[in-house]
Image (cartoon, rainbow, N blue to C red):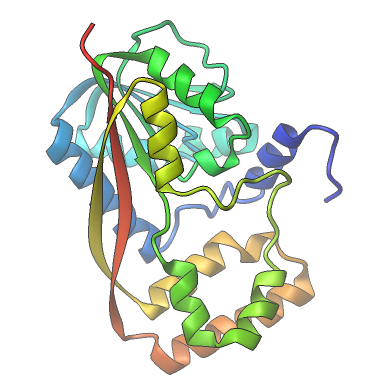
Length: 260
């Protein structure tokens, strides 16, 4: 798909192509369940929660089913994702929004959650300032995502040559800040006036789970010929070590707004 003159529109269209698959599979399910459980342990039930960058609603539905918030709202830039979220996250209010210009009053939410979203935001300081504005005093912004090692594990397994070819085929939206990490998120949140604590949430999985993650996350974006080649590589991973159990983890940042 040819890029437009608007990187935001490109990103929205990019994720619209993943609307029906993103978040599916065992890897995503296990990671999501572990993260939601940790958030519930840390915060208990909150009054109001914004799932910012809610995508197709997998996390919103998980928060709903876990009783994480009495009032839950989902917001995303992609209309394609939101269309799918309306099916998955029934009865949850959904809104199209830009993370750097949030359409909410100040102090609106007791908690705001972002899962693997911030690397797609060009103006990270402005985004975090907006999030801090929308948090109620003593509210918490939760960031899920960082350097959790999936790419590194697969690179070791498939070898440098195959990985180089593999990585070349993976498309990304324009202007994605792929080198961002938890330290940058933490520093930017602190500059916005939030106090940050980090958690590492561990969960079990297998090499087959990781191969499935790549099928879900990347195969729908590839051209047919590349899809066949990449699928064969993933089949090889599953055939060689698919049932082998491994320890996986997700990183969470709990960024708290001071009392008024």
